[in-house]
Amino acid sequence: MDFHYTRTEATTAAPAAVWALWSDPGTWAAWDPAVDAVTLDGDFAEGAAGTMVLSGGIETPFTLEVVEPGARYLDQLTMGELVIRIDHVVVATETGSDVTVTTAISGPGAQDIGPLVTRDAPTAMATLVAMAEGRPPA
Image (cartoon, rainbow, N blue to C red):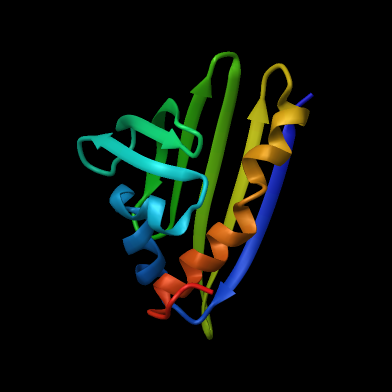
């Protein structure tokens, strides 16, 4: 059985400010407590691959499956038989943007690993939004 989790945060930051953080993997560890380090081979573009080191020292390959500059990216991590796809979407609003992140996990144990993978999502999104707004994270 698959696992799905979606969270949306409103921000006064423009989509470009959110995108600037998302499209620079060097910032990911600054706003996502689940990530220790990221290396991307090449530009932030569809099909680019890299390695993500998750907290606890877990190293996993990832690929950028979808990149729509300024609006959306979807990355896929493969951990054995588990496939984790994280879709990031930013949409302009009258007061800034809505930031939505959807995590979908498939493979054996997806229901068990899902809550562990997404437990830091509220903190990650709050920190991302704070950084995009130019204020210190809470």
